[in-house]
Image (cartoon, rainbow, N blue to C red; front, side, top):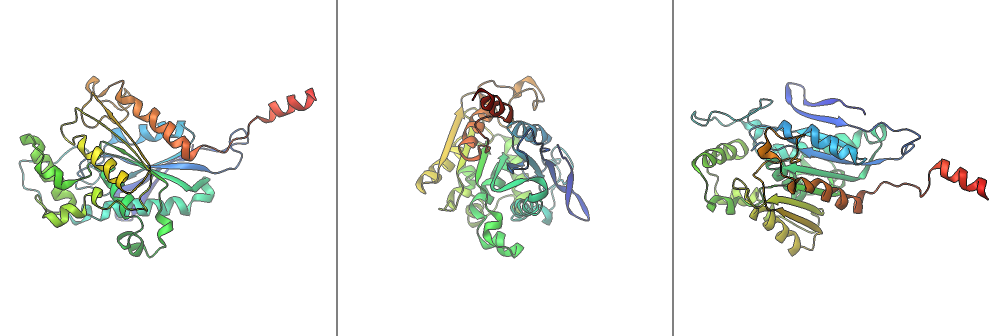
Length: 318
């Protein structure tokens, strides 16, 4: 496996693309290109969670896909955790929309730039996100062919196209979220996340609609795999259902799984990504298996029916 960390800015270390490129061999694909998955960890646009990065990438790599982890711009930069909610937060321009979404675009361009060396099938690149990372992926999925992306980079829209999107416990509708009841600590978290992402603790309705992917699904939105848990009180499952509804309205293919048990932020929902047993739910852990089956419908590797050895044996029999 070829793993390297690519910095997106010369003067910053926090925004990076980490590669998990499968080494090829005559015993594997023999020079053929593989599909790829670009992963965006969550973290409320305050940070990027380590729990939703490398372990997830390695799981996709085990399916036979190249994997990449994008640590996009967040309020705290490369720091882990959350800011002190008791202190006044200052606006930091570097993390405000549309920067995180555009950094997915930069990651797509980077992958395409190295496609020959890395043996990436550029027509089969999916994006996968969790929580705020899922929101970032959802935003990219509805804006990838719009001027906010392609004109910014001065590139043709097809350079940014994603073939599929996987969203884990995504936030999709900020207008709905504004009216959803929250605990005091959750309210503080969302105020901080809003300020990190929009520059305002309480953005106006126009801004909330602009950053709500459910209102911008179009015929060019890619197929989606959606999953969440019904016990998630931080980002309730209604966001996932609203996204599915918006996709259905535009006849975009989708698959949705709402698992009964489990809180927000499960990642793989197993010991590889858990801080404690409270983040391990066997039923919810099935999402990655379901996602693998869903991806195979679109990303199945081009394999022959028989191995060279089997063909040799067959020839000898005849």
